Amino acid sequence: MDTTHSLHGATGASYFAFSAHPGYRRMFAPERLTLGIFLPLRFYEGSMAVLAGQAELVRQIDRQDFAAVWVRDVPLYSPSFGDAGQVFDPFTYLAFLAAQTKKIALATGSAIFSLRHPIDLAKAASTIDQLSGGRLVLGIASGDRPVEFPAYGLQHDDRGTRFAEAVSYFRQLIRPGRLEIDSPLGRFSNAEFLPKPAAGVIPLIVTGSSGQSLAWIAEHADGWLTYPDATDTSIGPKRLGEKIRAWRAQIPDGGFRPHMTNEWLDLAEDPDHPRTPLHNGFVLRTGRKGLIALLEEWQAAGVNHAAIGIQFSQRPAAEVLQELAEEVLPHFPTHQGPANMPDAW
Image (cartoon, rainbow, N blue to C red; front, side):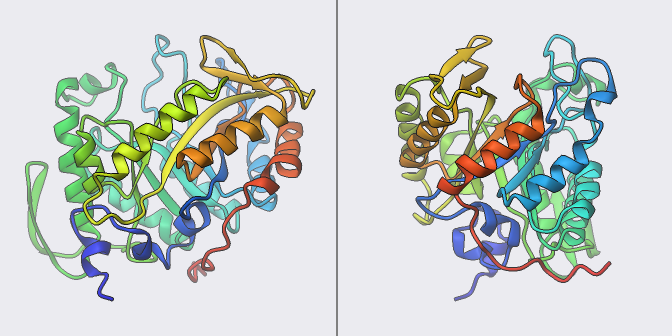
């Protein structure tokens, strides 16, 4: 089957187009759910010391066979948002983590495509993908922090348009051979972009609406990352399932596209602790039985990957990760996809 258009075209690609992509195949398969861990493992509150030792824990996450580790893209810390992300630049940090790990997928949740030029985004993304042997899965977004747009000399209201233009430009860049691109974001001819991704493609996972219609996301995204709705009862997963089905019904070729969601978790020592919302529903406190039940409900709703953040947990991070690995991960095992591309750099 000719996969050229699916791999390098302007629209989203189906499952078969990523058959050789180690990161994508590790995370995603139809009707199955895998688990990833969001960084940082502890919440930044004014001191970088809170991140000390995190690299060793990421190596532990890799050894424990979680599907992915996720980093966020927060160029400027705005106290009004109260969240600095993982603090480090996402691409620089993923390059560091690529050297620290062997098999785990490296995911962004999410790179702000409306703030940066597509050439810079593609250069960083393709470099990490090559250095990691094809493990990068690129969650992308239009941005939601108004302070950042004037800082870049951009209009916050233009972010949706710039996002769509950046996605198109990015996909054109990673096509093989010499290129000619004419975009509102820039133009050139008779030049080649290097390096290419290790497997010839980088999955672009659209976050939320990113200023686009559901039909646009169905056509152009390689996957969709959305907020989970309520997680303390079964009502939220049911509503999430309705949203996922509505999106998949609009995918032009009817092919599989993965859906992802996330939750900030405070895992209780008591395995029977009920699912209890904290901080106005922003954090879920539950024992592992409640978490397993939630993940099963998500899987039934059509979710293919759950990214779990433990930065608000009361227990030590290593202890929480150990319990997740031993008691929860076996119910939602990581897929055994293709081996990493040769990366003896």
